[in-house]
Length: 430
RNA sequence: GCCCAGGUAGUGUAGCGGCCCAUCAUGUCUGCCUGUCACGCAGACGACUCGGAUUCGAAUUCCGACCUGGGCGCCA
Image (cartoon, rainbow, N blue to C red; front, side):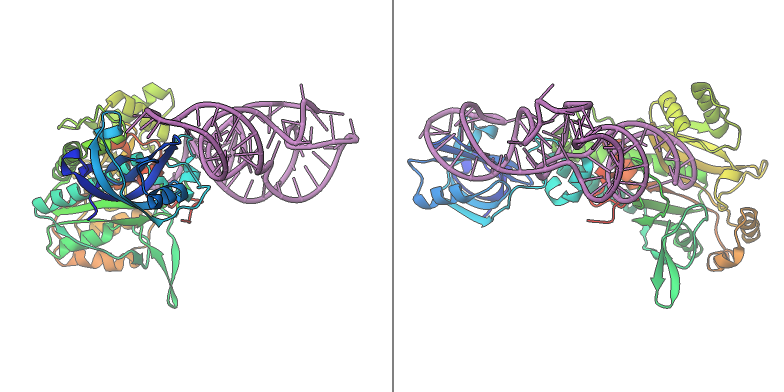
C-alpha cells in the first residue's frame, strides 16, 4: 500500500512510496535518490553491496523525474533530509522520464516565465509553484464556505451571450450555429436578474472573458470572477461583506496553508485589519495629484501611476468610494441629493484594484435613461430590463478578481503565476 | 495599441566587427568514488530566432518579420 511521503516515519518500520525522482546522487558504492510526491521529499538510499541486482539495475536505468515505486524499511538517520531514509527492497520504474527536460524542476537553473508556462506540467512539479495552486484551492473553498455560511445561493450564469454586458470592454465573438455570439465579460446582468427572481443573495465563481489587448502583469483575457449580488442591501452593506470575505479568506489561508506559505518563503503573512479605510474619490485624486505632480482633474480615471501612488499612501487594503457617475457603469446608483456622484466603490490592494461594486439602479425608467446616457441602445438590453418592470428589489453587489486576490495575497509579481494555463494577448497554448 | 529592453546549447547566461569551429553554470553521456544533501573529480556532447543588407570579414552593424520581458494605455 502506497503511503504519502510526508507520512513516512521510522516508527512505521516498512513503507511503500510512489513518486517522482527529484535528484540522483551516485557516490559509487552508495546512491542517494530524492523521491518527491505532492506531500514532500524523502531520501532513498541504495548501498551497492547490500542491494539486489534487480534494484541496482533499476537504479542504473532510472532518470530524473521518472515515476517510481519503492518499498523497504524506513531507518532513522540524522544525516538524511527529514531525519529518515528508505532502503529499497523493491524498486520499480513505473514511468520513465525522457531527457533533456524543458526546464529544471530542481531549480538549480532558473527558467523564465514563458518557458515555464510552455511546460506548465513540469513547472507545477516545483514545490513553490504547487504551493500557489494549493493555496488558490484553499482560497476558493474558503470563499464558497463564506458565502454558504451567510445564506447565499450559488448560481451559474451563461458564458455564451448575445450582447455586451456593460459596453466599455471588448468581447470575444464566437460562432453560435447560424448566429454570432460572445463570451461573457461578466455575470453582472444575470446576477441582477436573479434579484428579480427573489433569490436575495446569490454568488458565482466563474470565468470571465475580456478581449482587451492589454499587455501587463495584472491583466488576463480569461480570468476568474467572484461575483455576488444582494437584495435589500446598499453599497455600504456589501462593502462590509467584501471586507469580511477578504479577511476570512486570509485567515483560512493562514490557518490551513502553513506548509505552502513556507514553501513560498512567506514568513510575515499578515491578515488584513478590519475597518478598511474609505477614501472618497475626490480625496483619492488629491493624493494622486500631490504624489505624481500630474494635473488630474475630477472625473478622470485613476491611472496606474496614480493607483500606485495612492496605494503607497494607504499602505493596506482600502476602498475608493463616491465615484463620479460619469466614469462608472450605467447600473451604478447615483446619490439622490447629488446625482453626479454614485454609490460605487472599488476595493483596492496597495498594488492594484481587486474588486468593484455598487448599489444598483433598480428603477426601470432610470436605468433606461442611464443606459442611453452612456450612448448604449436600450433595445439590446431588453432581456435585462424586462425584470425591472415587475418588482425589482433594491440591491447591491460586487465582483472580485480571484487571480488578483491570490496574487496580492502571496506577493506574486505576475498574475500569470496565479493561473495554471493563462490566456493573454499572445498565449493560447497550452 | 504605444514606448523601452531583449532573442546565443534542453535551461539560465557571457561575448557586442577579426582574439569565437563562441564563455560559464546547470543538464545529458562515459569513467572513478560508501553518507551525499546545489555531492565531488576527469572527459565528452550540445547553441548564435528567421529573411534580407553593409563589410575582405557579422553572434556582434543596419532593415524587415516573428517571439519574449517590463512600463504605459485600455480594462477588472
